[in-house]
Image (cartoon, rainbow over all chains, first blue to last red; front, side, top):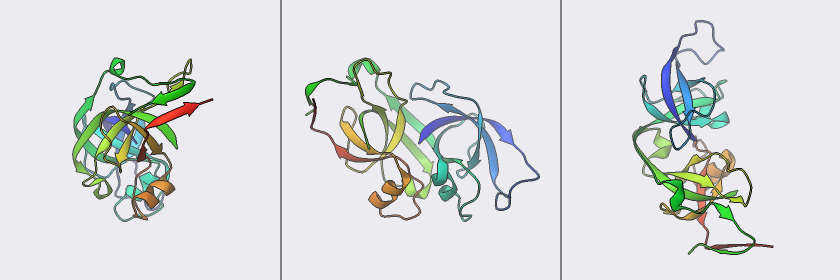
Length: 106
Length: 89
């Protein structure tokens, strides 16, 4: 599950069966520092996100599970939440390396 | 499953019903010395983990649905444990 910024919408008249009635939004996948991490993608909207919203996205089969009633629709990216607050501590306050020997964490 | 460090929290009021009354945490995977760090991701909290905890994360939908006891949960990453220590040969 990852963050994404809604950049626009996509309108398709001819779609796979089961996908009609789905709102398709153009999203930019982001990392924890809100930097783009890949090309724009199209996501199925479940939470009525608007342009410019920071959203929570889910990929693969779980995206089709997130859709309200249609099951196993050919959708692999869905918007499942609109982020209101994002608090991320700076990297320097953590140690992400696993060293040889004993790594106590508590 | 992978080892990760909780580095942040995400607050969403409007979200899918499967995410209700559970916390969403930003997790940065741990790595050996000299390895390029993996991408960070967001996981659903199942063990009351907080920022700064080292956690065990299950990143597969099937396992997540079992942990959440919900056969239709649209969740991939779930925190399934808080790590006390790690020993590496």
